[in-house]
Image (cartoon, rainbow, N blue to C red):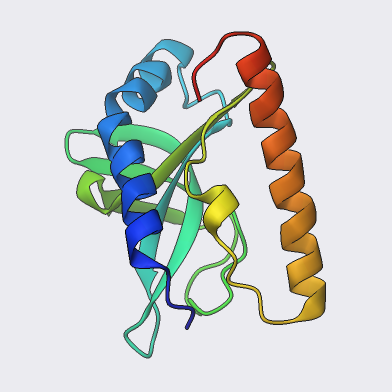
Length: 146
């Protein structure tokens, strides 16, 4: 499994944690059970006892638990597939993202996450990172914090 760089990653996770209430408030206001544009990223245990970080579409936040549907295709978590119902403790959330017509808020760890080994994966990552940076730039043009 890919080993994440501790210092930069930790700072980005802390930023996501510090702004968690912003996500919760947005979830409550936008009635996210009907709005599929609010995501969190959390670790899921792989059979070899390592972790894979996956995005989930949030459908409910109940106290210290976040519930939703898996939003991406796991590479190593064999018992999950896209749209599988999942739940995680709030303390396990390491990133969040809100997508709207105005852009993206959150996604703090996305630009620093290169788990790519193959040239194709690296190319896809570079395109995704560039697109994300473009969105963030447009968001900042409108005076929004990211």
